[in-house]
Image (cartoon, rainbow, N blue to C red; front, side, top):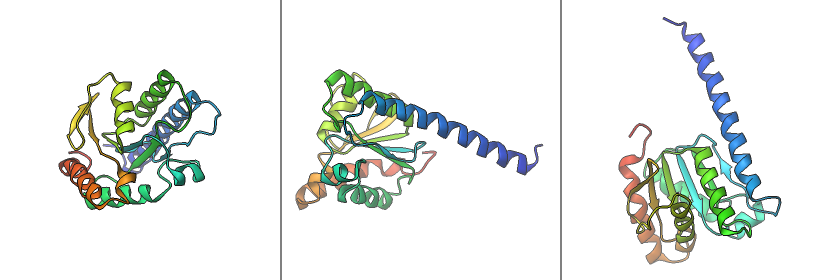
Length: 186
């Protein structure tokens, strides 16, 4: 049996190796967008949960990174309340004026780079881009589906729900389909 110190050291080495690989793949996906002022992805590159937003909002544009505004805080609080894993990464599919084929290529590369267990499309544009990137049919908001073996749920619009109580309640119900998947290993 290996010495526990050896196992810990090996785990750290493998974590660093996989993080470096994911970082390189994320950089390659971002490079597809070119240097045109796009909003960059952010978070844990080995995330269990990938939060995908269509058009960046004012907070995202100001910070130059996805979910930097109130919607990022709201997404975090909602997922925390559901017990969904805290390892998260976020990006915007339409953060630059890209041709559709390039946008979908970047979207697919980003999903594959992070390789999450759960993908949450925070608005209809994000859902459209994710599903089109994988050649999948539309999925109604709040329906748990699987895309390339990953749990997938689309929301009606998290950012829009911050100023609309009725929409906020619907988005919360839509997110609740993730409840059983909340913790790693589920």
